[in-house]
View 1 (cartoon, rainbow, N blue to C red):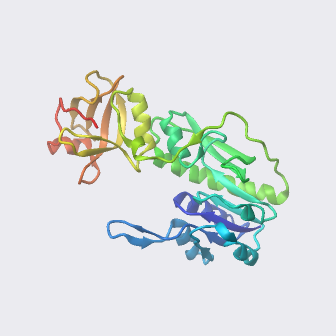
View 2: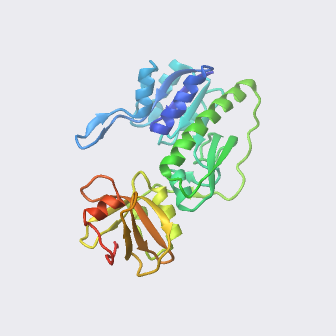
View 3: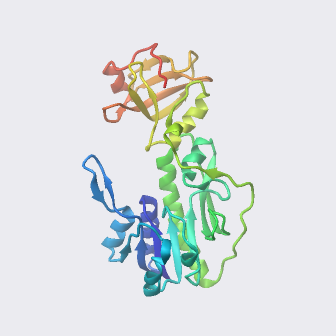
Length: 312
C-alpha cells in the first residue's frame, strides 16, 4: 500500500522505521510538526520523523496547521491508500480522514477506551496500572474514539518507568502496525467497537510533577516512575532548592512526611524519606543547577543530612 505517515517524536520515528524495514509498503510522504528550537543554544532542530524520512529520501511536509485544506493538494499528489498516524500532535480534519480509500489508522499507546488523550503512558503508570498496551485504531472525528483493529498488551512492573514503557510501546506498536497493514491489504480484519468505561489522560502539567510526601509511598513511587526520565517529579531541600527525582524504590520507615530518615552510600546509595504511609528510598536525583547523580554522590557532597525535611 501507498502510505502517508503522520507523526513527530521518537516513538513515531520508531514506528515509521518498522514499516520501512518490513519492505512491504511504500511510504510516499511524511507529515510532521515544524522544527523547534532545542537545548541551551535554542538551535532549530528537526523532529525525529523528519530526520528519518530525510535519511530515507522520503518527502517531508511540516505545516503549522492542517486547517483550510492545506494538505489536500499534497494528498492529491501523493495519492495514498492509507494514512498512518503516530503521535502527530494535532486533530485531523475531516478532509484528511475521508481522503484515503483505507482511511486513517492511529497507533494509540493505551488499552482503549482507557487513557484516551495526550499522556496515556505516563497516566497509566501514575495510576498504578499493572498492564498497558497499544491499539491500532480506525480514526474518526472523535478523540481516540474509533473502532479497534488490533490490540496488544504488556505488563507494567515496579521497575518500569515512562522511559521503559515508551520503548516497549514503540517496539510492540511498530510490529502491530505492520501486522495490521498486512491484514488490511488482505481484507482479513474485523473492526471492533471500543468496550468499557472511557478515561482521559490529560497532558502532564507542572502540578503533576510536585511530590506531596503526606501521600502513601506506593502512590508517590508510581508518580516518580511515570515522570521519569522526563519531566521528572520534584521536591525541595530545606534551602528551597529544587530536587528532582530520577529513580526511587519503596522502603520501610516512619516519620514526619518528607523527613530524611537515613542515608546510605553503599552501592548507588539511598536517601530514605518518610511518606504518609511507608517510605521511599531515593536512588538517583537531579539537584538544582547540577547534573543527574546517584544518591551516594549527593550524600558524599554533604548536600543532605538525616533529619532534613523535603517539602514544597
